[in-house]
Length: 368
Image 1 (cartoon, rainbow, N blue to C red):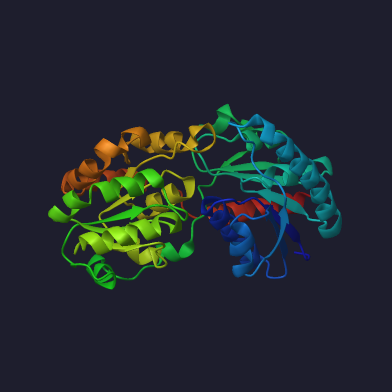
Image 2 (image 1 turned 180 degrees about the vertical axis):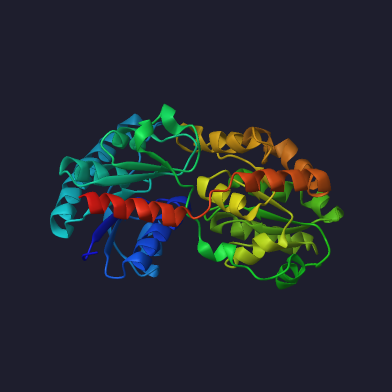
């Protein structure tokens, strides 16, 4: 195929950035000469992560609407208009054959501008409940790649392709046994182990629950790998020094996530789409605490899509203080429930997501 140009837009969280990079890598594998340009939001994590992965990125000054302080939205509207002008300039300069949107602030103005210029667009919707931006873009998109069934209620049925969410390939390639993986973290190789993921910035409720339940955790026969995120790292370290729990390993980030997943019997996590896709592909029993601070409460909807199939257990954020630690300790000790959750979440996994999305990208470019 000729020297194709692909623009990929979106970001804001790892849940948007990892799929975007996976799609870019899939395109490069198929067509090494392809030119790929990312467009993200200024001051968001994609501006650091994308160049680190070897791709060029341009930032737009776009930001989200403030639902609590409406006066602040004058600045948001100004940034949106500025972003639309910049988006048009990027399209003139780069001349993409296709624009791919993965969600996040930059995705809206960038794909809207592409559609106005007649450039084909593909949307990757990661959640079980479609966001406002993707619903607006869907009518003029050539394809909408989704990770859950039943999204016909948001999108034109003839444009939907069930692909699943691309995940970090490294997490699927761990060669260690669970016992070897536990040793890597300095833990007892034979004890039940839980991974608590506080996210890249940190999930306040999850971290506070673990801190508040530390005495019960220390008294149990369970081990913890506790990723707090950078915002809660300092407080967690102080707690670790004060309590000295021999069965808890705490860190701001888990860099060897493949080994962490392999080491554990249960994962406690928020219910972001990317995390859920990883848990499905790995068949990991999970206890989900959906974040209440996301658009349209989509994490609760993501979690419920699993709960309804017996594929995960959910504790609501507002109830986590009284329920989370007890539920975690009870669940990780229950062989039958762990096995059922693992089997049912595995059934929901959609494999080869990158290949299917890449096929669709090339199909659309071919038609152009």
